[in-house]
Image 1 (cartoon, rainbow, N blue to C red):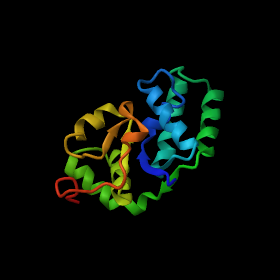
Image 2: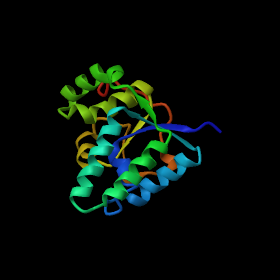
Image 3: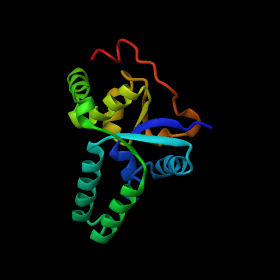
Length: 162
């Protein structure tokens, strides 16, 4: 069986460690599907920076101890999430950010999904709500079901003006 492929952002992956987040059960299901080889995960290289920064912020808010955050970093380093170099998607991310009036770092994930022709899952409800009516292949992690993971996405003109 060929694994399905998706892009995830750091807000999805952080739910694997920050148990006070919403939609952790769905995020855990995605992780299980990844660990059993049913899913291949992709993310731009900014993913690693966002993960490390969020874990540092979580320690400052007493959501994790320093030791728990370091253990989480080790876990993330063990996951075989395929990284897409930011310079490969930088122009597309910039165009998408201008088109949809979103931050470059959020649009890096959109650009990665667009480049790969695969769906994108986010745990950022604000981002999802801002784009869900404009981009059919952005998915909210709380709605995750393996059976609903899109295959190759088709970019229509409205979604791909970049």
